[in-house]
Amino acid sequence: MRTTVVPAQITTVEDRIAGSLTFAQIVLLVIPLFISAAIYVIFPPKMHFGVTKLVFIGLQYLFFGGLAIRFRGKIVADWLIIYLRFLFRPRKYIFIKNDLTGRDSSMQMLSSSNVSKKPIKEKTKKTYETLAPSEETHINQLLENPSLSLSLKLAKKGGIDVSLKSNKD
Image (cartoon, rainbow, N blue to C red; front, side, top):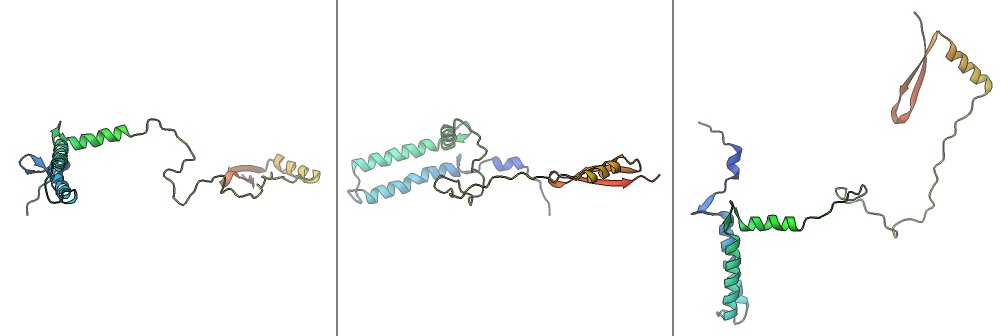
């Protein structure tokens, strides 16, 4: 069996279905058929043509026909979508760190009505015990001893591991 590599750019080519019309253009030209049938059946005089019915049917054929026209390689409907996205885009972007965009929907913003009336706990500072003078002199003697070496390593969560090792040469 013979295989052929198909380049990725071929997927961007629009298929021509009838003459030079693409699928999107045919859909835009068929939509007025269904809308005009609904106008013919629903609006009075029912199942009869009237001047107002013919005007509405003619206007919608002109509108959808105009959307199906090709301009600079795209149909007018695509250009209209691009323009409307540009028109309705936000003009200013304000970055808010606490914005809920992109977060879980289970998170809810706290409003003044949801805030509980519990008293706020104040953070207590850790107090470290002071050493007795005898213990302090013992530690100073250990640090001044040349046969011992002191090593400091950073631990997780901002701690420091301190160790004393003996220097035996």
